[in-house]
Image (cartoon, rainbow, N blue to C red):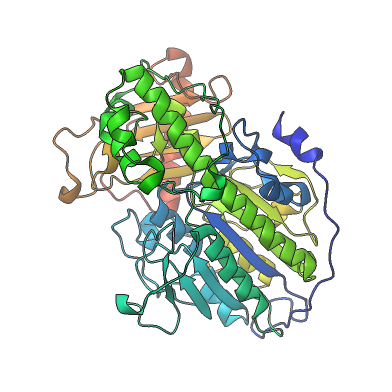
Length: 510
């Protein structure tokens, strides 16, 4: 079923009465009731594992409620597909080269301008609970209760505001499964908030990040084999060295450690699987991985249902913007891969669902190109707070009302900086339009610390997304696409100049 047909068949829940919000001085539209904002973000939740995005693998009825009651964005993309950089881009509205977080090793500068900080100054009660993953203490929040680093799936340790951020002795353990724990804390934040202020809550899940340790109550889900993606057995015969050299491949001996680090749920599995013939090892590795992943997603969906029910029951739903997204996409076996980092669709695409009964029509779908750097400006726009000139994203408010500005972007810029190098994924950047995607693997690490014995040679890939949505046919060298290549390279140079990312010594030859 196509996602538009799916959404149109979902019912809209009844709107609830709004709780008035007090307008703070220094904001535009003084006297206008400002919405509450609930920004829900999971870690590595791919759009293809969400019902309203057409999942063939699982059902997500509670997340789907947001699509039925709001807008689904078909073409939301991240600007750097890796956790910490994406989170920094979302908070600041700036690309990685501007906010200073290019890889997992970079430390986020919390003194720079962020949308929560601006909302806090404008009178919002602000909080972040769950996954933070930015190394430095959250700034601009009235309250935080976050996981140290990646955090644990069971009985997670937490860092809470008012304690010494650097002192591990002041972390405290909360009994339970992490997705339930984070939701409990998020609900407490809303229930105990000041009643005379609008609130902004960043409600961020750890799941379904590896190592995919699921709640035992979901162990019986997915007893039958999960359908394999069309490109699980991709042989890369028409691709360059970049994808051939990576080690984030399902069933590859170097990645079997993933099955050895998930506690009792997968005890000894890696040793058993590595003895199998290559094809069967890949097939079984995929099934173990995808079932564990989807069981983690089931907990997310269940807990989002709990949270949405509370908004309805408390009368908050009508005047609360609820956003659901993930920090980036994720490979669920496509191209034989897991993880992210690449500019291929499954890694690049983010789910984005927005419900706001005051302005967003239920069951609506948007196909414009939107980015994670757009979120900050959008929240500020709805709150009546001026958007700083140095934020590089655009407000999505007009799109959410069903109106696409005449000057809306027709292409987007992506860049992944080689990290340590993790999974041996080559550094690359590229441009995507609605019809095409051009990727340049420039093959060089950011610095000597990321050097590899055999760096990937510079190479290009071009995909015709309309004729080849699975991205298995690189047509860069096809004479029929000569003019397309030229136009996309010119567009790529222009984007790099406009965004200020053209001073790295990487030269594009047209």
